[in-house]
Length: 291
Image (cartoon, rainbow, N blue to C red; front, side, top):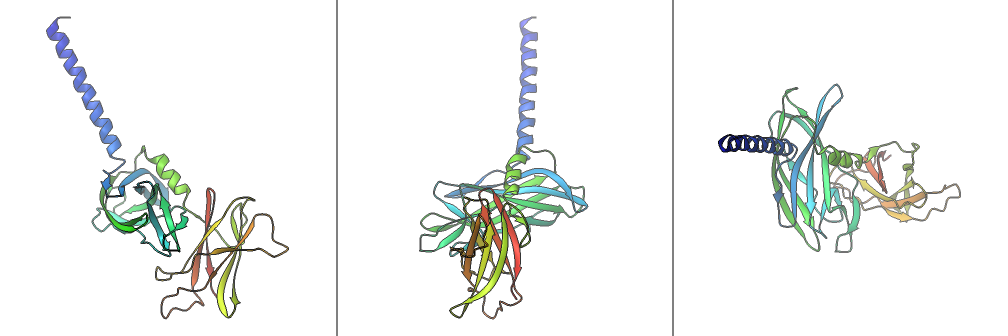
């Protein structure tokens, strides 16, 4: 092979390699948006393979937030202090509905004598997305306000955009792990390794409180969270209390919290509380109507 032909062949091989590299990069880029960095955190959108549910196609996506060591961000109910994330998808294209799911959170001191509820390190909030026009892709455009906290809390913002086509994705495992951490809906008294076996309202020293019995595998620590029917309710965090009932089985743990923090003018009777129990890699959520 003469030098001219060898040089031409080498150029063609290089061009093909560059094209393949660009195509590979484009495929990867379709699964994620660019990171939007803030001072103590960074955020992006990710996409995974779509699913068919409720007779239609649902796109799967997620909001991923990475936090610097020692920093935290918040659950939908932040506890004694903090700010839940606020998401604005109004600039999106072909978007009918989007539902944000929350992986099981943890409880941590807020630095002011109370406790907050949220996440540390890396968290992915799964999104369930339904298109306005079935069969067409969706472009998510998200303006997000959230808060991050170490000793002090500071606001953070992110502007993110990602086109969803529902195809196979390198983010399937990441999003699947986050979806698995979303508390499963359950009924009071339902059987399971983790369950809320009983809930009751009682009076202590003339003040109402809610008592919750949780069953978990022996030796597993349980954390319980309580939310009111709207974001305006600010219920106290449930605290462990001693189980004195002779009939309590192994792994039974009891929690109680004052029926306090109701919005002005709100009545407790008839309201439905949401209780979330977390133990190890399991989490459940039940509804309890106050009579």
